Image 1: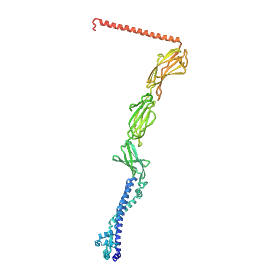
Image 2 (image 1 turned 90 degrees about the vertical axis):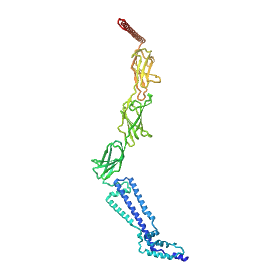
Image 3 (image 1 turned 180 degrees about the horizontal axis):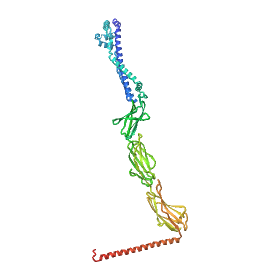
Image 4 (image 1 turned 60 degrees about the vertical axis):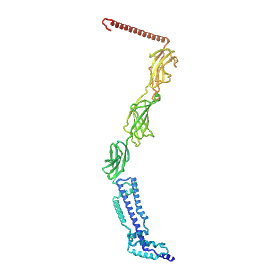
Length: 566
């Protein structure tokens, strides 16, 4: 048993065969890795070149270039994993390399792999004949003479991929050289440089950019250029409806500024300006309706003194009492951010409050002045800063609170004779639109200082006031004597505490202070005048009766005459 172990341990592996099989294994790894590297490098150069070319054509924004950068390196990572990492992980060991050789050369018939496996320590068990293994080694070495083991590793794909790589490198180098400064700039942009512009002979340095206009408004597109300045440019429009248009842009005479005006634009669009070989970034013109008034709900708040409260009004009939307030609930056609009411006839501008919970609704109020206000208009601004246009003017007719009217109804004569101890009856009638709030009896004695006596009004509706006042002459603050005269009148005021109060005075009457004898004579004269008037009236009545009797008598005689038929 010990002899057999010694025989097994004394078998030495074939150094020649192991070396040649190891060369096959190493060549396989190098060829696979080289092929994968050529494929990956070809992909990198190609994708970077395609990205640079697209950027040159369309001036890709940074975000698009970033996405392309991710696509590039994701593709390269996939290729590296598939053509380098995976082949290295699956690279054959010595036994696998020996199998490749045996598959290529039939004469080995498993001798090569057996030679490698049986010479490893512990490969032979005790009692197995070592001399047979040694004979196998000698036979395998002899069979391997003149056999090119490395030929089992195919290099055709490596050569093909390398040729493609060299061709791509050459083409990329040629294009990079032809591009000169542009190539360097495009390469920087390919690696996500944010501040490197695409080099052009003409650079579009500024445009009107993104902005919002009202539907139907004209749109002015402008751009400026540096470098080679062309005589004119063009602007390409891409409308939201899908249609495309292109227009020329005229150059300013004294500056490299190009302009195109589009009349009455109805829909939103994107635009790109082309000046020579330069092109601008894509701009957007957002076309939205201008804010307008969709509905107005006016309510008139009457002054408190009128006791009329709040009344709904029609925009077609805004005849408003001065001192009133006109509350407005305005509904716009879209969301608005602010607005104001422009008053006409006066210069006031009143702000509107936007309803935060419903930003298409605005609230406002107009205090109606005593005069000059002729109307108002509503002006709105939306979230884009667009303002309303051609606002309707709503007419307002201001109705002033008319002053009250007053007249003295008694005494009937403008001049009365009274004694210094008399009680003089003064009756009057006052009328106002809403209510008479104060009545004063004013008087002057012999043209002196004006005095006043306030007459107490009853509670309730005082639009029409009829009163009789028993004026005690003897109780006047200033005593009067025979020969004095008292000029008196009634003055009233209404309850207008907003634009008033309105006041009015009656005609002035006169009372002369006379002696009792003169007063009695005056009264007798009045009685005589009254009796004379009564006598004249009686006489007139008698005359009328006679005429009526004669008329009846003549009619009766005519009816009794012969030949008269009833």
